[in-house]
Every structure is written in structure tokens, then in C-alpha cells.
Image (cartoon, rainbow, N blue to C red):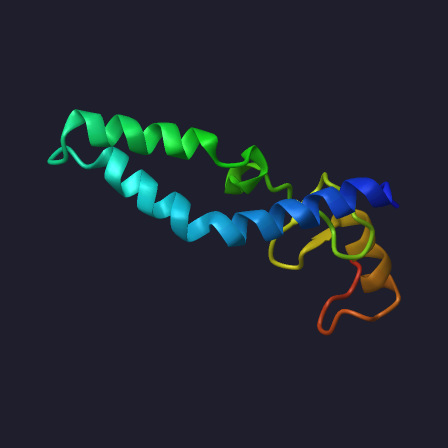
Length: 101
């Protein structure tokens, strides 16, 4: 099980990213538009840099929903390989059977 603080920190990042997504998208559109004057584009970049760092979607870490493990994460199942293997062995994932030969 991952540290509770790391899982909570990631949840906070997800919340911040959702909160600032619209503002961040609007500022990026202004900053990347070649038709707008250079001063406005620069001002948009400064405002973008002033936003909280944890509001950037790239800072969100994929974590297992079951254990909070950050590595060996399967996006399709939102689980780590270890948690998925345990649940599959217990028969709790429909249609999935642990292979054996």
C-alpha cells in the first residue's frame, strides 16, 4: 500500500487540474496564436506561469485505485499489475483468468 499522503497529494493535483483546465486552455490559446500582438502573448505566458504548478495535468501521476501503487499501472483497468493479479486469481474480474501451463 502506498503512503496515504502520496495518494492524497495526487488527488489534490487531479482536483486542481480540473479547476484550472479552462483558464489554462484559454491562456495557452492566446499565447500560441500568431495573430495576436507579442505583448498580449507574453502577458498570457506570464499569467500561465503564475498558475499553481500542481494545476498542470502533466503533474498527475497514474496510481492504482486499489493499492495506490504508482508503477506497473494498466490504464484500461486503473490498477497495478499486482492488484490485478490478486483480483483475477480471486475471480473478481469478470472474464479474466490467471494463465497457467
